[in-house]
Image (cartoon, rainbow over all chains, first blue to last red; front, side):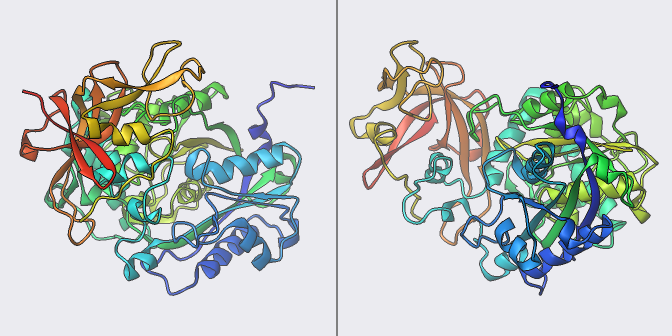
Length: 397
Length: 132
């Protein structure tokens, strides 16, 4: 027995699917989910009966929250799946937790093909109630939440206040400037213009960015991602079976899921978050290096998080992400490290985590059409902010 | 608008009510002498149960801050400052609060601050003002 085997390498992505990305969509959350899942199953060259596992993050935690209105239980039933394993839940290494858990289920021998999905309907929710999703609304009456009671009494109504604290500290320690941070938003918008499904597709200039209103300094409106209604799905398959399927398998070469600090938004390193723990773990599990990465899909729920992920994954030196993205050339579609090639969440839409995996696969398979980068085999995906963080190193075989 | 208040329990009560007697109470471990936050029954450093709230100086500095301009609720007064305060007693002993009593434009990282309490119902919120 090899007890030091890195089992994620036995797992590959074999198919992807995504519903329409609406702002809002008039389809139900379940319909969006089924659109994405059926597309992914067909893309993998499989039948519904081949799927023997379902994973999701965070799933429907019995609260009907538009942050995640459909979980594995409902999806399994609606799709008529018989499964050996299914699971979801908020607590874990962030928006990629579904992929990480699904890969572990395959590596453990529980499943051959796991359907991983992520559905979000925050655009419709906010059309009805502009305060939907406020941190102060997560508990009724007094705040009894382990995480949020330390923030809501101080009028922290939104995660942006916490991300702004990270950004301000990054600016202070490393001299990062607004004109540099702007390049994340501007790059995403340029890429979104080439993506027919992106929410925002009109050109954005540096002046537009600087003129966008300050929400929580130093973060402006254009540093925030855009709510949408959408579902994304991917199929994870056991690698030996994957060889016989139509798409060239995209191997999960390495995963990062570590958290070597408290699970907290204010007790962790403000400039490193969980992200550095995650990056360190991922690179320790592979012989590949950051120099091998041909494209990166890096969480941009808020633009500052993308800068921190660039550093955390070793894609640029620590503290130098601002200089790395300055001018935008390096991270453009034809740059040395294209990022967020579908427009990210800032302009493409807040598909929240799995959208990045979908886009990474399109790029690795050469199916990204008007926004296709140069041919490459290695891509990295990272998602989360604060104590939430997970990453994948994907290699097309 | 009224602030959302924390639900009090045996672990967090001292932190939220210390201000009634003008004290900022932070959990400290008798075994390793280190402070920790948020308060909990076990020292996260050395796993000792010999922990109890202890009054600290209430002095610290701004580790990071943000000026919130967004009116998240109809009657929320903006702008206001959300900050992470690092207490003088120990590096890394830090938590989120508000900096009050000076124009938002004057707040900066490393600014010395001291605690001031805002009483709402049975909670004394530890806020911070500039330490002269």
